[in-house]
Image (cartoon, each protein chain N blue to C red):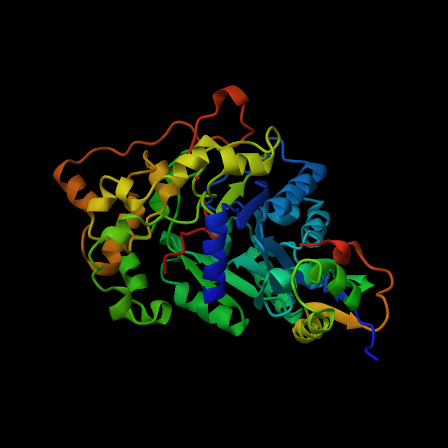
Length: 385
Length: 106
């Protein structure tokens, strides 16, 4: 991040302003990706009017970066009407899409509306591998065509490459494909549990050896020696660090109006159909609790040698049963990167206990009497490399 | 005699107030700018219809201890720089047919 962006983020934190929001317009999708953490049904999405009103509320609350995602955003027939309104309210808009429904006409419209960047999911340079992951024949061709249409319009494009067992050897070729398209490249080596708590898709995660290969690949991480260096000791300053921007300067809103700290941190914190966005942001007990947590408050992680440099995701920790606890997936990343086991790993080796999963995790609007809570980061922090 | 200037926020930007400052990003090249308190006041008032000297008189000189001449000189330099980055439009005529986007303040 540039110095100015860091400075603005620090100011937003000080002023308690939600600088970044990810808004999912729908969980419906034209693809059926094998690793997807969402269901694909419509449980009562916000209407066009509700979303426009929410955008007005978010603009008034100070939201600057707006990531519009899904599901597939173009499955909403009112997508361009919503986007027009977002740009009218001068958000800096980033789109996440599979690109299948973006042809020349849509690419031109996106450019006219001044979208900042479009992120397209590409799983492999091989059509058969990509299409097997999306379960949609022809999707690779359509997604790549979309990237070309967008680039022809001069729009910045990022190819997002989620790494899993099915495509673990393809990432360098996807990176090369991004270079050919004059697009940015983004790799995400983490498959996360489904939002309903189902962990069955976690078996798609690449193994330690593959993860180590990614982290020690100079073409991806630059200076391998520096990237994989043993962590510095955890000092007093590190103990006061905040885990990430989730709930601090960022949050997530689902298609049903549920507010979470992050798309990866499904702790229900309020619903904009019942409470104004700014009131949820300022007063939600769940967001307040998330904001109160520093490394010092984490019993295991505060004792861990990786404490100051770990990419620990509080949302993944929450999904593993304790938002103040470690996240096994991030422990694995720290180990793959440095070869040094985390405190959590050491403890698990001495007393093997089964993982606990929380029972909550909702995907529909909150009922006032059943609020039970926990937080996010607009730019999913899963991208550890 | 100084030419009357009209200033209008570009549609090709993202912008938001952050405390007493304003963040502005150019949608054409993603360059991020921050405007200080005085520049933010001029930015917010840049509706394409109000002359710059009037904006300076009403939004700057009433709030800060500065002579109208000095304030206008500084403001002219500021809007010129912002126009060079494409985030503000300048004209010696009012901007006709202002869209809602231009009327929208950050």
